[in-house]
Length: 331
Image 1 (cartoon, rainbow, N blue to C red):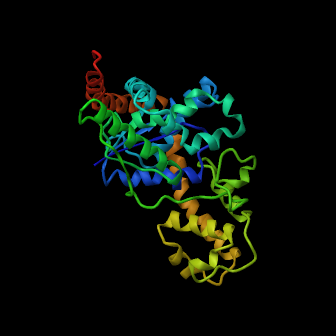
Image 2: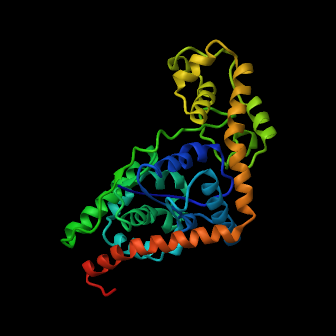
Image 3: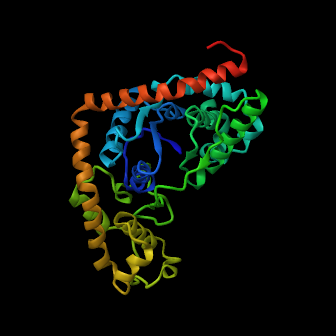
């Protein structure tokens, strides 16, 4: 089993990123051969300042390593350091069909009424995603509900290419269900909206760089309702803020929602919030300390990324060479 997954290097990492993706990656390392990459080419689909992009790559690398991604156990690399990614993406763009891309709902969601002004890269990036995966003959890809379409597209592209050129080159990837459940973390100010760095209110999220006191303050002021916590999960329906805080507690401590409620049932948020704040501080304090150390040694971060990129390049080179041969071009 070989797992490939990428994350865009954006600033302002928060608890939603950690519980929703990064800690699941950490657990995956013990279940499969893993390649994790910083998707800086994908970051170009929206306007970003060059200096900010360079800084974000290092910041994301530091956050991943601080969270538990082990560069010795997994291959951690920078997407743009591997020219094979965009090379293969062009070949696969000539395999993919316009109708397939037209069905991608994320493009419609991201562009809204300004579709004509969107970059071509934003339209075709699912093909680059397919290349990211197919280049390494990955068997599995961890995805959320909003990315399942893209796995299906990668499978369609792999099968069509293999059929068109009568080769057995690309592996149609499967969704990866390992690594435990990824938490869906919502805003601390609105339990119906995902936690996001784009929210104008900093009180809506727990940043990975927040101090212990700031974390406690944000949890204390998090939106709730006046009702006590119920005995069972069903009692959280219709109470999005309560459901969110209970879910965060469970994700941080490794408990199920039912286990959390068994302990706090009948209690109000005056008792629950301090316990949640303590659990978050216990998780994030050592992570933040490690992150600060890594930030102070950019040369070490660059070394980890260079070594990972070299390993990834060696792994992907034979696949790209075979793709060129299959289509009748020299390599």
